[in-house]
Length: 143
Image (tube, rainbow, N blue to C red; front, side):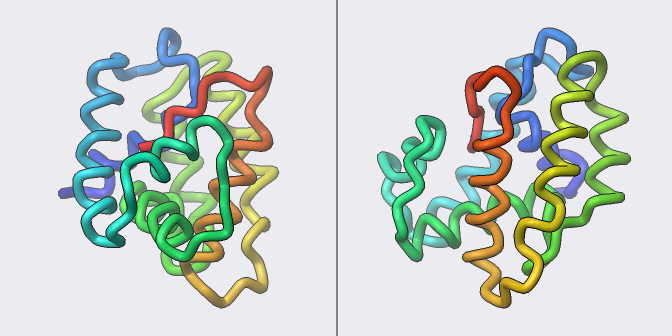
């Protein structure tokens, strides 16, 4: 799998009507990412689904799942947000309000994991930051 293909996971909370990809393409990408990350960290489906409703319990498997998604998506590598690469990729995939919303969230969250040495914790913190910084509290389409 290429990072460009799975990077579409960044679309987990945008208004896809304005994007360069269809909702069906974005859904397939989210499913592919989940099919890799869920068995890798052995997380229950209900717990992974809970992220979409803002449920972020202090659970090691959940934290490692969020990190797996962020890393497979190309948003993070280890405990660092790949800000420039993620921003460039967004500009290729998104447009209009969706692009602007993601730019704002990525900018707000790019340093949220600074100083966190644990990769899983870093992924968790960045994911929660994205959730908390959604404009208008749009649906959070996390894999």
